[in-house]
Amino acid sequence: MKYFDYAATTPMSDEAIQAFTEAARLAFGNANSLHDIGCRSLEILNFCRSYMATIFQTEGDSIIFTSGGTESNRLAIQTLLHNTDKKHIITSSLEHSSILHYLQELKEQGYTIDFVNHLEDGTVCLQHLEQLIQESTALVIIQHGNSEIGTIQPISDIANILKNSDAALHIDCVQTFCKIDCSNIAKFASTISVSSHKLYGPKGVGAIISPQIDRLNPINNLVTHEYGFRPGTVNVPGIFSFATAIKQALQTMTEDHRHIQHLRTYFVKELQSSNCDFQLIESLRQLPHIICLLFSKVQGQYVMMELNKRGYCVSSGSACQAGSKEPSKVLLAIGKNEDEAKSSIRISLGKNHTEEQCRDLAASISSIISSIDSQ
Image (cartoon, rainbow, N blue to C red; front, side, top):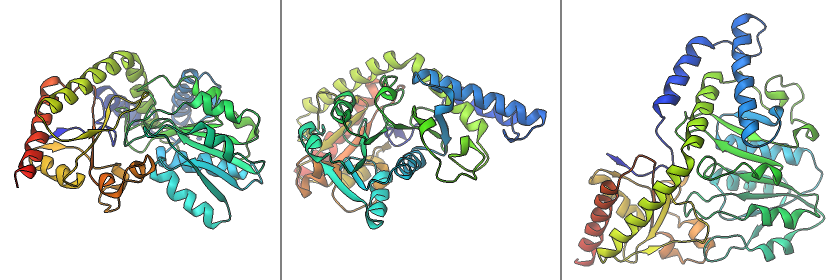
């Protein structure tokens, strides 16, 4: 199988696998235990925490390790809301399902949720955001880079709008961390969520970065792990593997970005030269590894399954909504109709892809669409 679904999850790098194995063998103790093996685990945990804090230009105790992006999003939002009496939340229709589903729960608990409008390329409408802010606004939630169409949001502009408000700002950096420079995001955000398995690390590991953590009270004051913000024995081997994957990804980030941008351009030109009828979702600021294509005469899930028969792994929309017959909420939010919103596939590139692989994928897509046109 030829894997083109890196936005859903990445394969672990050899270095991350080796790091996990070594830590699982040498630092298997509970980091809260006082014996030597526990202290060894704590030493590794503190090293990883300090390393991540350095990346985000913040303090070591601002890093809370979690089980991944979904828990990071939910726990960050829960904690921020726990620290205010305000009940108004502003967010985006382009958010990950882990946030949108949780917001539905919050609505049932009495919170008011407002959704900011988007421009055609998926960028948040800053004027509308400014209009939505109220004295009762507790929290603004924005995804840095969208997992379906790749649009990158102007975080500094959003933060500038909020500078005269008491509202907290949560930024979902799951798709952008180690793909583009996220180091300055902590200057603007109350909390940031990241995930390991999007950057060649293990599944089941993520983190919250909270530069203002010293001002926040945990949801449960009886919890002893992760400064009281998250219960449960800490996954030290997974965290060490995560940190290893981060280090490797940051070392090659500029080179990988350039390579993937080239492959994206190459792939699109190959598809265009085949006279395949498609629409490409583009933005002025966009993650190059995410390619969203719309087809006029066929649903995206059909194209996805036909590609699967030919040995290609792509997705139709976000992986967390796979199998849904509903049109893409992301595409509806940027003005596409229901037929268009059901017609998309998402191709997501990785650092090891080649021109030949992208050329063959373009040829396979063209062949599938041509066979539909001839029917």
